[in-house]
Amino acid sequence: MRTNYRYIRPSFLEIVKKPNLKVAVVIACRDGQDKLDLVLAALKEQTYPAALFTVYIIDDGSVKALVLPKIRPAKTKLIKFKNKDRAWGKTLATNFAVSTLKEDVLWFLDADMVVEPDHLSHHMKWHHYADDFVVLGWKRFVGDWSYTPELLGSELRNGSFSTLHKVSEGKDSWELLIKGTDDLRAPSLESFRALVGATFSISRKNWNSLGGYNPIFTTGEDNELGWRALLGGMRFVPERQALSWHLGISTVEVHTDTVIAHNRPLFAHHVPAMSYLRANDQLTWTVPENYIVADCRSMPAESFKNMVNEFLADESGQARFLLIGNWKALTARYKVTEDSLKELREINRWIAGDSRFSCEESASEKKLLISEILQRFDEPSTPFFYFTEGAIDPVIRFAALRHRISKSGNGLEGVVDSKDQRTFVIYAPALGRANRAGGNVYRNIQELWGMRWSEISQVDFSKSLSTNNLLPLVRIAFRAAKKIRNLSDFTKLLKKARQVLKKTISK
Image (cartoon, rainbow, N blue to C red; front, side, top):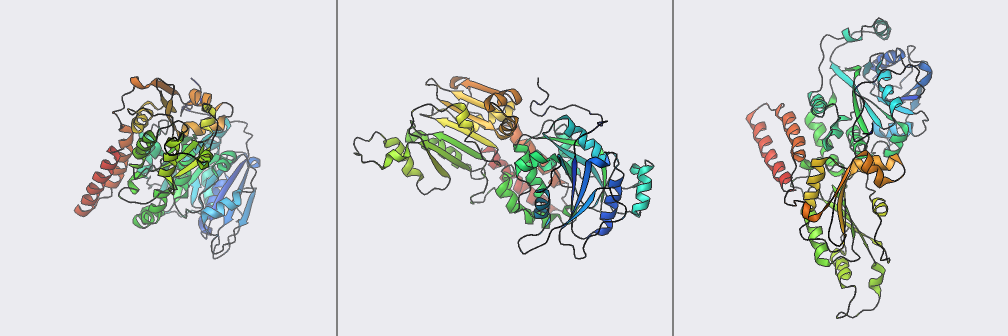
């Protein structure tokens, strides 16, 4: 089996003795000079070769301009991000600064993180092994500290990192996610939450392919990036030896309700995995859960409507459709009683004015090659892609195909009927990995993720619910339950759980 099959990775890697990859350490900061001084003092003690990393401090409109302290890594630069009415905040400041960098790897570090001397080296051992890793550092939160940059440097050189703080706390929900997925070797779609901005690294090539942070996110930009990275087929590695102290308790923990209320609409629009945020809202979401390419050239209108109605019944997931057909031919004169294009014409009339449908012209009668179909799946935040063609067998249920792919873990699950008509679903992370690997994408899916084709008669289409749909909800409920303080909170949680479970079972 290949060493990059699905989420396989080595169980342990030694620190690289002679590294050669260059690193850009990116720290966005607004005010907080005192903490920044400690961060830089810790970075000065990194064991990764000083010649191979440069620290970039981005001053995001500090009231009192940041300055570079005396104790800092040899190569440290200050970038001033001039704030304007529509250009301010960590997200835009980071995108701006990173756009000009040339280093091989980007290590994003918050401006309140004191890292252990081997921290960067532990990140970089993975990037030297393969270029598709997103490495996550391990952190503990501390409420008090009294050391100066000078004292901190001395303690780190003496090997006293672990004894700097006797009292600390982790983030239970994050550590539960890591533990519950075998350190992200068996991630679900909910595992995007593992990417938090405090300390993570990614190759510059992959950062650029993702497009950086989504600029509409003021907070939560790290989680949303994690969603796109997960769908891109990148492998997340929680590196337990890359230790750090987070100076101060998390803003999210202190202002939980405010931050959640602020982020909820954006996550609902951009992360389909958070379907519980979409429950009971009759809105059109920016990112659909399903993207369907339908070859309508020989598709009966009844088959088309049955297929569409199944997808559109899922109000929280939602869908977008690309319809392939000889649409231009519909403008020619015809007789209603002798219309050779009546099925395509009816389809065209049903979708008129509905923005969820787009049409692609094809006058050819040739069957689409699998490579041609895969090229049309280009929705970076959508987790499931479907293709169907011709007179769709009435027994087919797309939810059942979704169930099969969730249960098998394959990258593609498809069925073929007696007329050699194909219907299949693709898991976005598998497609993302296959695209980045280069060469034959279809073969890459098979080799890197696995696939299965079946005759329609071999498939039980009555099954549409996988336990994989429920496990993320159980984890969410566990986290929420830990915050219950009174009977009212419990009642609200129970009501919400019933709503979400009902919505999930209906898929």
